[in-house]
Amino acid sequence: MKYKRILLKLSGEALMGDQQYGIDTNRLLQYAEDIKGVVESGVELAVVIGGGNIYRGSQAEHMGLDRVQGDYMGMLATVINSMALQSALEKSGIHTRLLSGINIQQVCEPYIRRRAMRHLEKGRVVIFGAGIGSPYFTTDSAASLRAIEIEADVVLKGTRVDGIYSADPEKDPTAVRYENITFQDVFEKNLNVMDMTAFTLCRENELPIIVFDMNKRGNLRRVTDGESVGTLVSV
Image 1 (spheres, rainbow, N blue to C red):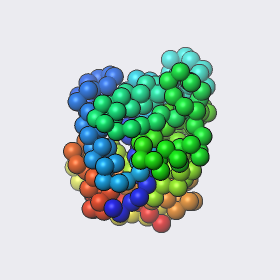
Image 2: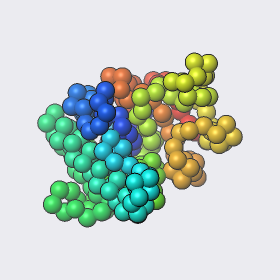
Image 3: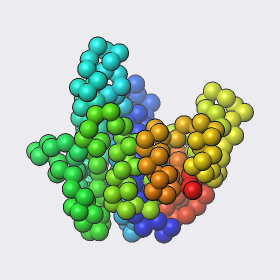
């Protein structure tokens, strides 16, 4: 194992699969199986998942809603996705704990750092729902902050693209993929990896980020085994 403890960031949109909304069961089960394989290899794993397949807080103002209210709605969307992932993991035999940044005691535990650390030490997958519990912060920020708090070795950002490119590969066929890149180069080239708050947190704490294609079966295990998959962002 190259990494002992990891924070896996998943986008809510990725859970849609080929659908236009909601959760694709096949995609959810694939993620659960990939996570199971990594956990059974001895890696301690925590997950933060977005809610964009259900609702994005940034949509609020366009809909005439209060931004703060919209952000809380987005947090609840992440809890729904977290519950779905928890159910899929437990169905495959993996013990999990869902910790929430806002109190919803009927369905999940409140986030307490020491409790999260203890769950990881016991081999449970810890899912962090509801972001950091405050508006104006994205789930990228939640992933960076929680990774630092639990002393993770790396943030793995699972996307539908196989790394960081010089331009959007879906729009520009000449885009070049980076295998390794520094935080400084990402800043200077204005590359889209995470939102600036999240990215700066990782940079200041020298926490590496790996962006990789989570939709390809087995990629998560390859990353944790130390294979060159995706793009590594480091100091």
